[in-house]
Each structure stands twice: as structure tokens, then as C-alpha cells.
Length: 293
Image 1 (spheres, rainbow, N blue to C red):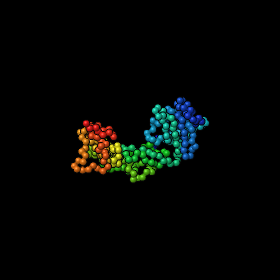
Image 2 (image 1 turned 45 degrees about the vertical axis):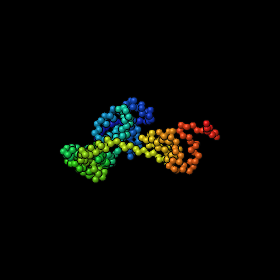
Image 3 (image 1 turned 90 degrees about the horizontal axis):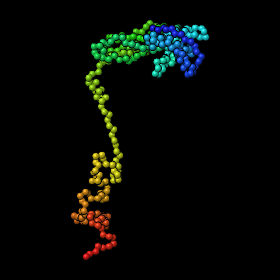
Image 4 (image 1 turned 30 degrees about the horizontal axis):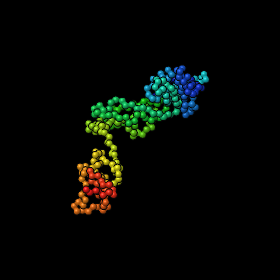
């Protein structure tokens, strides 16, 4: 059952951050007592006494007999330590909450479960003990509240499990969780093939994203040239621009033969032959016939 420890407390009237700092400087921890039948009461406890109580606790549920000094009169209040607020990087307690309960009234709380022994499936078969549930939700009187629930798992073979309904709890304690829920399970060991597949999957590089380049319309100037085709653009004229391209490299100085193979020039090409002199020959001045000697 839950430990019942004694702790002295004293009511306080000061509130606010500055007042809390002053209390901590003097070795006092601010606290509050609340409950279903109690109005919140601001109290203070000695830091040394509180640390001693917490060190004596063997589980998460600590039942405290608070001896509260209220205007010179001592009143006993039965309470559970509900929450302890620690400093983020210093080993000090900033605040503590006490949840007052009645000795004759049942309460509900979460109790940790702890396996006892080594399962046979782990010891001889190389299995793994898995914790499916780490706490059980229970209902009982304060005096019957267990600090922890221990479960013997030595007989578990690979593939076997222990369910909520199979766990023996102390007298007066009722488990509220579904009886069919699994608490402990012995799983089969991972095979070498499965381990290799998991390792390979973890080491595999992520696939490179595919780059999609928009295709320009046929005949559009500035068409995208694929990577690796640099230097070939001059040899491949853009679609529809064949007539506008200069002769291929090595054809310098050779003018096209007019009427080659007995074919007449293409329609619309008339008059253009004179406008484009052969390479290396200067064109005659317009309007002046060439002189003959």
C-alpha cells in the first residue's frame, strides 16, 4: 500500500512571484492543498523536510499526513502528493501540490507495474520483453493504495503475454482497465535477414527528385538545349529557321549554284541571289554597272 509519511506545514498569506522568491531564499517551499471537499489553502513547508519525505518514497503515490498549523492550531489533513515542480536547471523544488483525500472515501489513481524475474523466452529463446502498459488505473481507499504493482513474468515463452485480468492486485483494489488489454509480451527475436533488410533500408540514399523542364513550342527562339549537348546548337538550326542559317562550317567561299540540278529557285527567292554576294567578293555599288576595260 502507499506509504503514509508525516510532514509539517504552515498556512501563508503572501502570494505572488516576489513573495515566493523570499520564501525559497529562507529554505521554504510554497505549496497548496486542494480537493473535492476542500477550498484551496496556501501553505509552506520546510525544504529539508520535504526532500526527506520524497527520498523515502518508493513509488509515485505518496500519502502524506499533513500537520498544518492554522492560526496556532494544528489540523491533520490526509493528502497525496499530486505534483512537484522542480527548477529547470537547479536541484531545487519550486512548488508542490497536495490533493486532500478522505480516509473513508475511495479514490482513483494510476499505479506503475513492474515485472519480476526474467522470462523463459528471453533467457533461452533470445526473445524481447515488451512493456505494452506501464500503469494500471485503480480504485480503492487511501489506505489500500499500492505504491507499485509487481508482476511475475518468469514463465512467459516467446509469443506469450500477460493481460490485465491475469494480474493479482492487493485486497481492496479494483483495476479499472479492460481485462483483455495486454500488459507484458515476449516478442520473437529479430532474424539476421530482417536485421539486414532494416539496415539496408536505413542506409539507402533518398532518391533524387526528377527535374522536369518545360518544352518550348516548335520554332520558338531560345529553345532549351539539353545538358551535354552544349556546342551542338550551332550545328542544329532551330526548327523553321533553316533558310536563315549561314552555311555549315567549311563551306565559306562557296556560293550556292543557281539553278543546280535544273531546278528553278524556290518561290519568293527571286531577287535574293544578287542581294547576297558570294563570300570573299565585294558587292557592286548599287545603281552603278561594273565598268569593262
